[in-house]
Length: 232
Image (cartoon, rainbow, N blue to C red; front, side, top):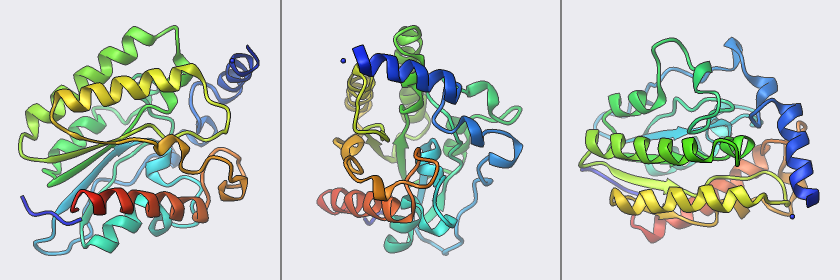
């Protein structure tokens, strides 16, 4: 492979889940909010880096596609980026809103990536604890499918991102499941990502839900540090 580089909180989350409709980017969902088709940047012979994620990896809130963290690190490292991430998507949340016959697991597998980033789990918090068993089972199934289809791919599993300073108990639970399955399939884990933009409202877009360009630049900086430590 070629490579480089507590009750108040619960109430608040329930309100958010009702208002947002089961995902951080409910207002953005719809035909106009689907991600771009998986296509690399066309650098001959460069490593392919695929990204399996939600709005925080799609780059919702950024002024342009090149300002999202995935594109920043891909450009810096000379990777061909494949990013079919979808607004509001979780391991179980909003899977029925994917294009007919399309699933992100299949999309990233089809790209035959040298490096795969998994950055999922944020939106599943809005279905917790009611669908905890489903979320856990979906994580296990997705990770197993990815490793089975991509035995040689370097898989980087990132702790689910988060967007408020208040943190639900479910976030730690989902993060733990993600880390456990990363170990099971021999993937590498990046911990702490849910804290990367914590305490910085100036790094949020006008919707109050997603990072702005400055926020994505900080995520890219922190991600780059983690990748440097791993020799990527």
